[in-house]
Length: 245
Length: 284
Image (cartoon, rainbow over all chains, first blue to last red):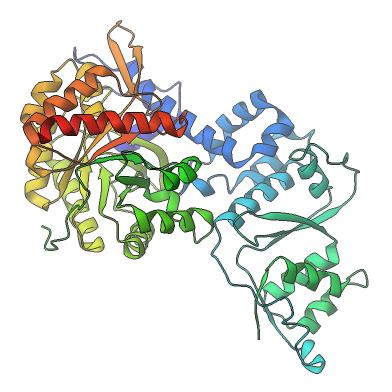
């Protein structure tokens, strides 16, 4: 019999499915344990890719839980592209609905942070403007100026202390997280993404700039907790502004 | 059939599969290593450190781009997005060689991150040849096709793997990447002779040889089951099979593949030195 790739696919992801007749060992018998090599390769390589992508999620739930969770994820969301560096894009939504992880409600947002860091790592390079570029601008022009933001830049807003939780799980001297809403900014001045704690107003302002809004409008979208000087100083200092236009 | 004349241009020297943790060691002193191989898919991001490192490496070493995700043996069409990414990478890098596998990994838009097997018959032959034509036309260069590690066989295969590969070369003008560890693994698993496989292999079409480590297991009947893991040193019988091959083929570019449990640089450099010795034997 001909073993179609559709049948191969169904069997490879379902450990309980019988191995198709037509896949044989040297004696002509159905190659059961031999087929398991493929099953194992697929499951282990995808699970390993998730471990690489989500080290902090893994630390928060423990190795055993993570492996079991990855086994469910990879069957529900097999990769849609051969770019394994981006495998796991559906992890935040998956974790939000994954009943056994409900006791760690901030887990989906931590997964979002880890995904954003990977995308920032692989984002296009960009040459930043000089740190004095804004100061050199005519003050009358400042509010109508648009700032092009580097492709690596990401902002994330959460109802949980995502910045503190991320730090506490990646740095030995980090303080214990306090339950509060936090926003963060990811920049990449060289090759390694950096995480910065910002407030929600700053996150809104930066997102408006990324959407191509002029500085005046990006400011107006935020409330009075926005410290524009601090936001622009941070963006300039991190090489996150690539053009003023 | 390929019109373009750009064929594989790797030197007949040892190369290694590049791992980022070895970057400084390689730049400081590559030892016997004369070229590097990278997995295409790891360099398909938009920028950042991976691309920058590859640019630096390419200034000093011939680079072989080895794809692991094109699914040339797939029943469906090749993924146009992936083919476009490959064209972009090969375009800016202009590597000395591009190779892919006789295998499939994508079906119904799902990618399995493994090299899955094919039956060897006329239907597969037509499909694989058409996909290789498409790749070579898109990239404007010859590609090398690698023989797989087999753990099982298909009851509906009608030809040997070597006959299949010979016919693919004839129909498409592609070259071959001969993985002698895969030959040893497949021959052990399917109870055939690795030397007979080499005797029957179209060695004239070989543009590169792979060497790697494998794991040992048993199937449910107690028969040996070798698994191509790339996580260990190359074993002596595979080095012997390399000598047997080189005596027939003459010097070829030799690659050490070590992809899991990657060792410190000196261990990998030692494997490359052993490959250099094997080349010295046939050069004299």
